Length: 187
Image (cartoon, rainbow, N blue to C red):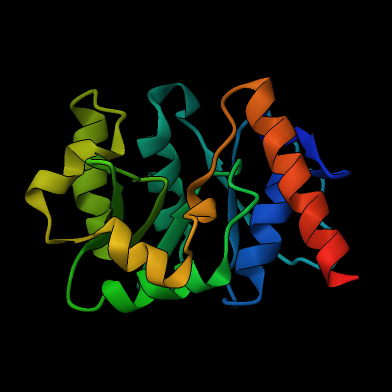
């Protein structure tokens, strides 16, 4: 399944994620593979950056975003996080003051595709990529990192739905039910 194009509640997953972030920034960047075309989301403006090393893992996507950024802080979210809450984005921004990376940690697991990175991390990212590394957590040991606990995250997102991503068809079904419930509550 190509996650960026997978549909939930009638819209691509990417569109849900982009819409949640778009109202918080004037520089939304969507990273795509060289061979990938992405349909624009209605009412959401973004720039595209090309991940020229897509086979190198998510760290290459982060490299593309950092290289294209117009601001010092880049908030990274995977395209398959359609339940993202803007409050969690704001928490990451606040937590990133005076550090290189602010990253959620839930059940002992770091969430590098729902984190804030300073553009100054670009050198570390490129160095890791040159060494054959594609995992974003590989760069954390050499940077100043603020790890947000589940309790801190729950203050902004009580059920931690922002960190929900799609790995299996049943995940997509569960997310679709949640999005439809939200739409019904807002109408």
